[in-house]
Image (cartoon, rainbow, N blue to C red; front, side):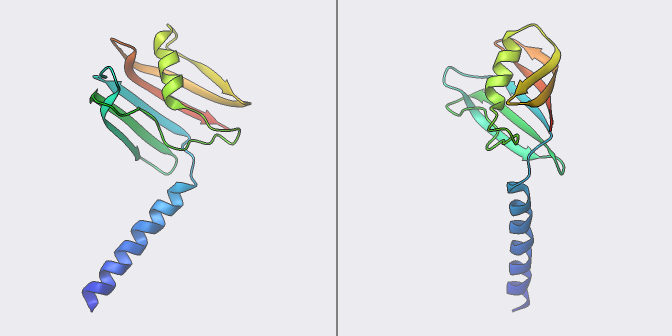
Length: 125
């Protein structure tokens, strides 16, 4: 009986944390793309690294789209993947994007061939 209660308690704590983060918007995202194939990526990992920050890592050839699920900036949905691609196609290593009145600062940490690399995004509201 104790092990069942312990399991239920652990499950409750885990689900509470997931629920808490479900409504949280990231303020900072580090996005990394490497090894993309014709149809996308094999591994797409989205993880929280802090209370309001996260990493989006997409790597190796596959069929998955590289995107952070459900980013609502308060002024509508924002697509990290599209912003990443536009920045990497350009030459700026830092700057700002304004999306529906919300400022998103970016810094290119690393540039790789084929518009891949690492970008840090900071969302200001």
